[in-house]
View 1 (cartoon, one colour):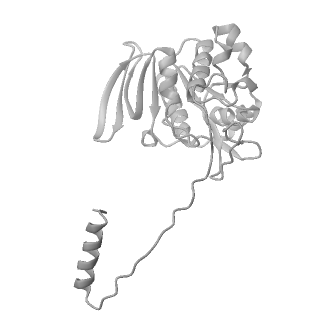
View 2 (cartoon, one colour; view 1 turned 60 degrees about the horizontal axis):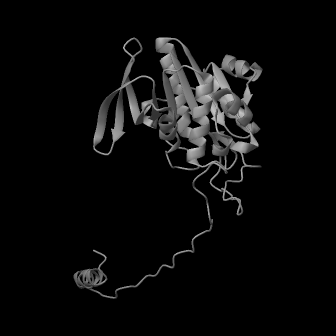
View 3 (cartoon, one colour; view 1 turned 30 degrees about the vertical axis):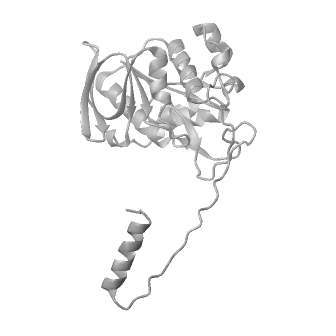
Length: 269
């Protein structure tokens, strides 16, 4: 069994700054963490390996500092890790990011399951995981709260999906991609031995040229150039001006009648 986990390093702050010219996040000088939703994907991949054997590979696309994210995944128990880093990848929207990660997975080779967090904490789109599945032409199972059964011999997986009406049980063929929600597990802490192994391990760094030469990827589909969506303008919306009107009355019932008449007149209800 080979499980691939796609993770992202995100800013560990709510004070996000935007480059006004490029419309992209300014990450320099901002402390970063592994996207919280991706921690559940890492944990689930490790649990699948512990139950079925095989290996786990974690990948991330980002600047050189993103190596810290894959080191944390290895410290938790992942076997291999790849950093995809090149200035050609910068400024990518969700489509270009999904395209790039799909090429990385093609370069890795055979796999049974791809795991992602349901969304990134900085973008909140939830589009990259399904986009990777679309690029690879495999099934996608989103908002997975439980893996009921993984049948490697029969090449099927059965999961529970968290939906608005409750839970939905779905069976899919392998390989497939799943995005997980926090209800699926509780991520473990890295062990001391895991941290030592992660610090000693060498991590390959793949560039745009590596993907183009090994998978036939189109350089024009990477980064800001390959992004079909563009940020035209970034601005802070003006503060909404509030107001308060008091209804003077010594009679609570009378005040309630006046209030109800005003609410109906303003068509608030």
